[in-house]
Length: 115
Image (cartoon, rainbow, N blue to C red; front, side, top):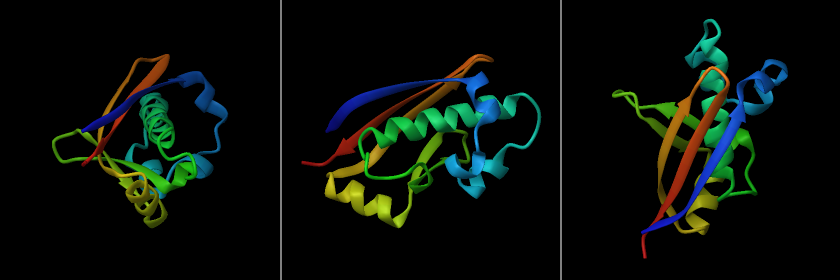
């Protein structure tokens, strides 16, 4: 079963002054290093994290890591604390879509539950 859909929009320009260490894991900060597209990449990750945190508001941004699967699709990895919170909420998995332009990044997270 799928649970609520959550869409989050991030303005890319707002990321220029963002403290990356407070918002992104080490892996996320090092996954894309170059140029203007870095902000678009991070914007997509931030939008995805915020969408996921709408389901698990007791977590922090650093409890959620957005990874890239070998074929390019985004995937959600939770900290141990995040795994416990998701299990307590009955969440068994995630569907995630991320997109961006030069001005905006958007992500859509759907929590999956087994009943």
